[in-house]
Amino acid sequence: MKKEMIRSLPKIELHCHLDGSVQIKTLEKLAVKAGIPLKSLTKVITPKKCQHLKEYLESFDCILPLLQSEENLVIAAYDLIEQASEDNICYLEIRFAPLLHQEQGLSIEQILRAVCHGIQLAQEQFAVQTNLLISALRHHSAAANKQLIDAIKQLNSKKIVGFDFAGDEQAVTNETIKATADYMLASGLELTLHSGECGCAQNVVEAIRLGASRIGHGVAIKDDPAIMDYCAEKGTLLELCPTSNIQTNAIKEWVDYPLRTFLAHHVKCCINTDNRTVSQTTLTEEYSHLAKHCNLSYPEMKKLNLNAIEGAFASPRLKEQLTKRINSGYAKVIAATEE
Image (cartoon, rainbow, N blue to C red):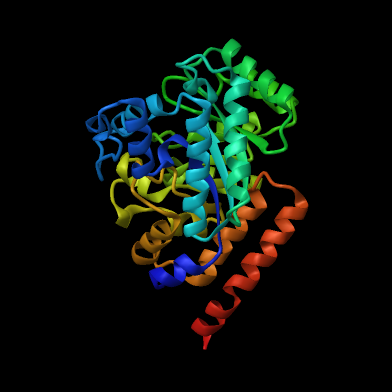
């Protein structure tokens, strides 16, 4: 597989964090505007190999102070969709945690409206269909996360299609967040959960039982055939983020990446960047790594994107349009490789 061909093919991305994906040049402009020294951005890009997930997450301490105004949140959303367009992504789900953007007194409604406005402006310029997932944090109180859900319901934006829980899954278990997840599901939103990123395969099972149709990362199930079979039976989609998984030591080395194991067990997977800037990656790079280290083929790449469409929190009509785009986009390159 050639990188330029991978770049040119239409792609779907479901797991991309807003704050971790704002380009360095944009962050620098925001820092200058705020009078913040550029040296404060030195840790935005995380090491290629972190000691643990906590070290990886330290990058956000440099980024979040720059995303505390409505104007900057609009800029961030626009910036990410512009990058997605360059990566030939035709459908993108952006996720972010509104409660992390209140340091300067913004209300949840102001924050949500700003990001939705940024998406709207970008979609007028770029052919990237985009929806928004709202992330709650495990360490926040149930009352705070309930307030977040109530604000989402009150805003009633068609762009907000799903809910996510992120944070330390070892310190705050899936069982602990059950009441909040139940309240969210009752509101009609779809649920995805960060689980199985830190070594506990059972967390993935618990997440599915809580109502998650997708799992953020989920790579911890690679050594448990029974749980892989359970995921396959349930049709659960794993939102794999290869470069991020290597960086955080969820997977030690590229040679250990479990994509082929998951495919052999019929576990549905899709490929994502997680945090474009923090991990210095693109979706093109992710597929290129998998081609090199996991012998990924064009037909398999097509299937991974079709999996993403099937699991996307998008309307049936949009899914139908995206499926046609993927099928037509891959037809020639697959036919050429079969000759």
